[in-house]
Image (cartoon, rainbow, N blue to C red; front, top):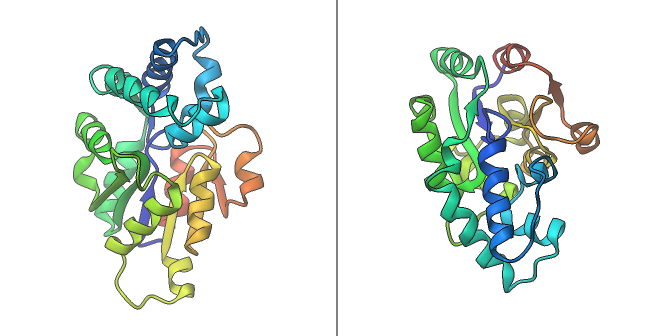
Length: 221
């Protein structure tokens, strides 16, 4: 049973594939790269954009800011709403909140976009704290996001054992698991997101669940 729970957003609470991949496609086209397959762009769901443009398409440090700007140009007005909340998520959040849990978002997506998405799906009220990255690209690593969420969320003086027993991070990618491990909290991976097969296991998730109902069981005991 966990009293403090951090949630990733993309691939964990919502399925953002169409909005993210279409916006990446738009950004790549703007710098002269045609990528017709949205499926091929799924690895962009989760990690910081700069890292993904660098790793998957070899963009250099001059091209990356342009690509991110073009991505946001489309995402801010259209892609942000090409998104679906997973069935059962709203009810799960309501149950956790009713049971007195303190909930936080810990996302690599800019906080401005996170807030808009939570409002759009009418689930903002369940979260005590919302932490994302900054629009200037800072605080984009998951361990940095988790650190800030924990700083705002936890009472001072918690021991390492108390943190492991009382605090959980829920996410669909290895970055979420690694962020949890970095700060000594329990990691819960959801297999219904966008991790490649075996990624959550290799990252060493403390729990891996296949459904929202199984997630609730782990979190609420």
